[in-house]
Structures are given as C-alpha cells and as structure tokens.
Amino acid sequence: MELEDVLVIIDLQNGLQTEEKHLHKIENVLMGVNQRIAAYRQVEKPIIFVQHSDEELVPHTKPWELMPELDKKETDYYIGKTYPNAFFKTDLQELLTKLAVKNIEICGAQTEFCVDTTIRFAHGLGYSLSMVKGLNTTLDTNLIKAETIIAHHESIWDRRFLTFI
Image 1: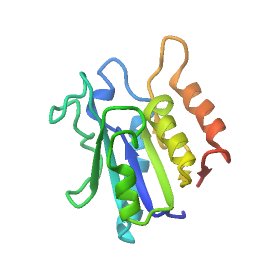
Image 2: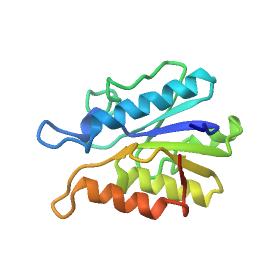
Image 3: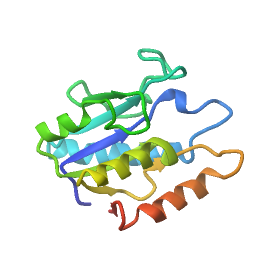
C-alpha cells in the first residue's frame, strides 16, 4: 500500500467512548492504524498524533490520553487542539511546512466531527489527502448509526477530498 509524506492520527483518545458507548469497530480501527504506523516507521516517515482538549478531555488526564493500544513513541509528533479543525489555532501547518509535506494520510475519530473538518480544511489548503477505507470511526447518535455516518462521509470524501488507498 502506498505511503504519503506523513500519517496524521486524529483524536483516538480514551475519553471518546464509554463502557456503554463504544466507537464503531474500534478494535479493527486500532489494528489498522497500527499497521499504517508500522509501515511509516519502516521507511522513517513522520507520524503525527492529534489530541483534542475540552471540558471532558482535560489535558494529562486518562480520558485525554491516546488509547493505550496505539503504537506511539516519544519521537512521534504531537499536536494539541481545542477545535474540530486540527489546523485552527495549532502548530500543525507549521509542522507540515517544516517537514515539507504535500501529501497526508489521515485516520482517526470522530468521523463527522474532527476527521471530516480536518480533511476538508486540509483539502482547501491544497494538501493531497488519502485514507485507508474504514480507518475512521465514530459513535452511534440518537438519529444515525455510526456505520451509516462513516459510509456517508466516506462516500462524500471519495475522489472529492481524498483518495482511498
């Protein structure tokens, strides 16, 4: 599978799910994300973890921490954010410029919030984007099942905002 200049992993944090509400197919997503991390590490390409902070995801608390199943290292890059857009009021674009990034692979949570917002904004900035189909996740809502939310967004993104690999 092809690799981009950088892998960006959005908000795969403990506090996004509870014992009652699990992120859709999270075990599969974590396994797939770790496979992508391994591929990027093998060729020494950068990996960026994005972590959201708010009143429920308080920095340096268990809910804010990245899921323990993720293969993260101190040498990876970490970006904190407080808005759904990983570029807004963060150092992400500055880091991507420093790393000479033109092509970004994105994965993470939640599909309809931070993943979608970041994809659309990155596209608008001129980045070429890709994703492995199914490596984004979300929760069921009172109106729509997570599976439908994911399928809907993937169909919108496909060949408009990103390429599936």
